Image 1 (cartoon, rainbow, N blue to C red):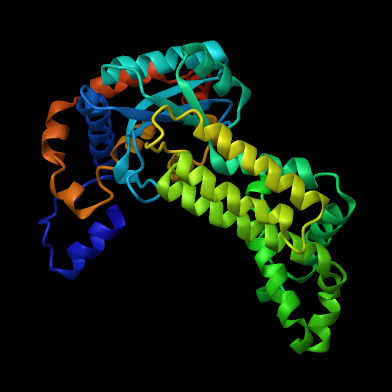
Image 2 (image 1 turned 180 degrees about the vertical axis):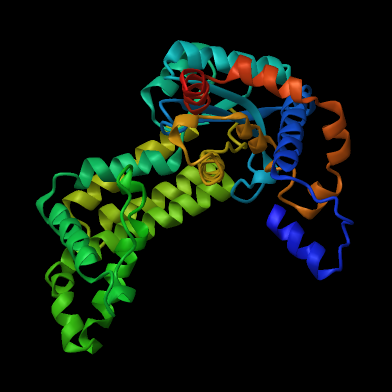
Length: 389
C-alpha cells in the first residue's frame, strides 16, 4: 500500500505534499477499525433471531484460532456472503476441547444478548461435544458431511486408490511439459474427499476428448480409458452431490429441500448405472438430509446448513497472516471483523473509518492482545537475543 501511494504521489506531482503514510500507520489504522468493529458486533442481534457458524483453524505456530460468525436465522436466498455475517467471537488457544468451546459459545451469546437458534459446524469431535453441552441444536455442515460419506465409501478401494495414485504420478511427470494444461488440479492433502469435483470433471473431459488427442497425449492418459467405468461412476456421484449442495447452500435445509434432495440422491440407488457403492452413497446422503431437516422445528422454515463462509474467512486470514510461523496469531486477526463491512460499496460508504480510528487507542489494542492472544515467539526471541547480545 505504501508503494502504491508513492506511485500515486509521483504520478500526480506530489499530491500528498510529502505526507505519505508509513506501513506502521496503515497497520495501526486497520487494527483500530478491526477492534472497534469487533467490539460493536452482536449489538444488532439483541432483538433478532440468528445462528452461529463455528470452526477452528489449522495450527498457526502451535496456536488454533476459533471463530464464531453470526448469520441470519433463515437463509437469505443465496449462499452466505461476507456481508451477510458478522464476527461474533475471536479466540486463540493451544487446543480446543468441548468445555472450552462451550465457554466460547457462552461468551458469544452474552455479546449478542441471547443464545443463537442453532449452530452450524463441521464434524469435529470437540466442536460437536462443546455445542452438545450447551443444549443448542447443531447442524452438520453439508460439505464436510457428504465428504465423510464419500470417504467411507471410496477410501481403501483398490480402483479408487489406484487412479488417484496414477493422477499424482502423472502430475509430477508432466506438470512442466506441454501437456500440463490437461492435468487435473492438485488434490488436497486434508479432506480430499471434499475436493473431488475438479479432478473428476477433468478426468471425464479427458475421457471424452481422448479419441481426438495426439498419440503422445493418448499414451500419457491411457489410464483414463482403462478406468472408464470408475470415472463414469464418480461423475454421476459428483453431479448428484453438486446439485444437492448448491440447492441446500442456497435454500438451506427444510422439510421441502430435504425431500427434493433425497429424491435426487435416490437416482444413485435406482439409476441404470447404480452399483453397490452408489447405492450406499445415495442412502447415506438421504438419511443425512432427513436427519438435519428433522432438527428444524417449524416445518415451513429453513435453516442454514453450510459453513463455507467461515472457510472463506480462514482463507482470507491465512493469506494475510505473518509468514513467520513463530508469530502465531497476531493482533492483525482483528482485521477479520471488517471483511463483511467493507465487502460491498454500500458497506464501505457507511463505514465510520474516522470515528473508529478516533475511538480506539493503541493501548486498547495492546490490552486486547495481551488478554486474548498467546505469546508471540518471534517477539520473545528478539527480546531474548537482544538481551544476550
